Length: 225
Ligand code: FES
Image (cartoon, rainbow, N blue to C red):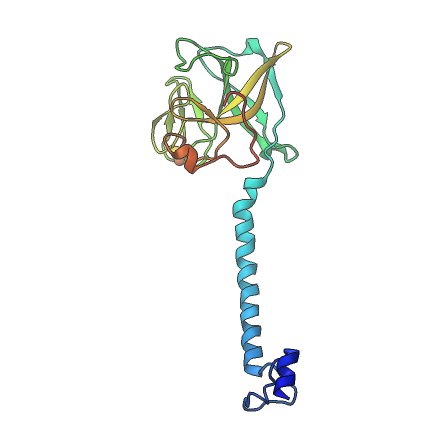
C-alpha cells in the first residue's frame, strides 16, 4: 500500500502520520489548515494596505504629461527687463486647479547669463518653488522671485540666491507663431541653466543629481536638451 501511494504520488493521510484526532482520508491536519488560512488572511490584509500606497507612489511616474502649446498674447506684450505674468493651463479638464501662473519676458543680453539660442528668445519661468512646490511671486522692486513658504529666493533669471530650493525655477519652452507667443512643455535647468527633462521639486540637477533623480519615463524629451 505505501509503495502504491508513492508511485501515485499521493500525500500521506493524517491517519497514516498518526496525528492525534486524525480523520480517515484527511491529508491536511486542521492545525496546518488553520495556520495556512491565517497566513493567507494576513497576506491579503497587508496587500490591501500596501498595494494602494505603492500604486500611489509609483503611479505618477507613468502618467503621460501632455501639454499643448498655448498662446499667451502678442510678442509685443513682453518686455526684456521685467516679467509679465500669464495664466497657463497645464492640466486640461479640471478647471482652475489645472492652471498655473507663468512669468514671461524677452531675452536680455545684459541680464541673461546664458547664450541666446532658438529656445530662449522668450523666457517663461514656472512659479513652482523647487524646494517643496509652493507658488513663488516675482517682486519687481527687488527683481527677485520670493517663496512665501520657507524663504526661498531666486534671482532675475530664476537661479537660487537664498533659502532651501535645490535648483533654479523650471521654465517652459516658447515659440512664436503668427506674431503670438506660445508656451509649450515645461523643462528643468541646473544652476548653469543647462536644460533637462522635467523633474519634480526637491530634485537637484547639479553633479550626480541628474543621475540620482532621472526624469519620469513618460516625460517628453525637450528639444535642445
Ligand atoms: S517651498 Fe519654497 S522655500 Fe520651501
